[in-house]
Length: 381
Image (cartoon, rainbow, N blue to C red; front, side):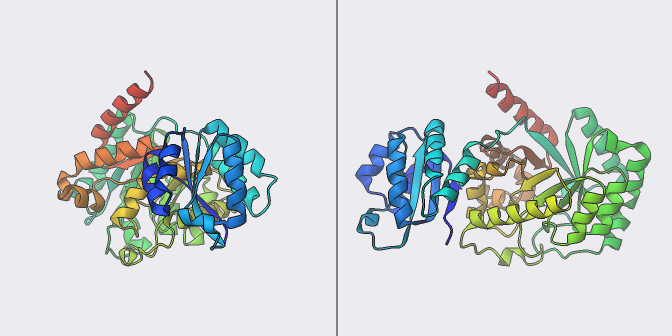
């Protein structure tokens, strides 16, 4: 089995040591070392473990291993690699010439270390032309929605995500005919008023016919909660040279919450994003956004770990989108109903920004603009 490398938030170092059974004395010594970067290595071959340990120490980094690894009774082990930026770069370079799969380990480490930092956060405002979206405050008629778009333009919002079908857990998929019936009036007005030239509009749909109608009306982003499982979505996106949001999920909204067992959550998302990026490139789609799918086929602990270790996905060097707004995880943590989850949403989204998010998909625009204004001012001091 190939070694999988997950980048971990440095604040989790003690917990990661405990997970794999690192000797307490050794853990205490390593905790005092510089560890801007922290990686959890899974299925690291024993032979590679010994070499990586030696090479890490030689550059001033370290590799924490389970206590029982000294007995060499298993073919592979988990390990925790820690060090600062320069140490990791030197370690990756040294391992490029090493055997036992360490060349692949080195290449993955370099992807993480050389990943681009996030830029100024962007807001993706949610507008639903639906009768059954989970948050009543996001439901609009066509005329109301057009007024909201004009307001967002004045506020300087970067993106508006518009949908005509609910994706709340348990909801059924709807046909493109029904969806277009809800959205046609809006699409036509967007085209007539040239709104797609004033603000970036995103269509939230899994139906390729709806996607085509929106894109020819001036929409610039295609956001598919089914992760472009219908290849015709790639075709439409490429035809209009639109930007694609690749969101991870399983199944459909009807059954997704029955599909939440993951042998390795981060490994699955890496595989999903890698394959979808490759497919998008084959169709000639150059502009991509990655969405971890917060709340889609995921339990509370999955959602929290994705936010905590969100920076792991920056190795793809693509913008990261997070949409936790008023979702069930917020309710479970705060014990609040949907209409009282604003403060919890702001807290979750602020942590997401700190951990590498580029775009926040939100219901409450003004409050998120205020939050971003404050966090950005503090960063720029």
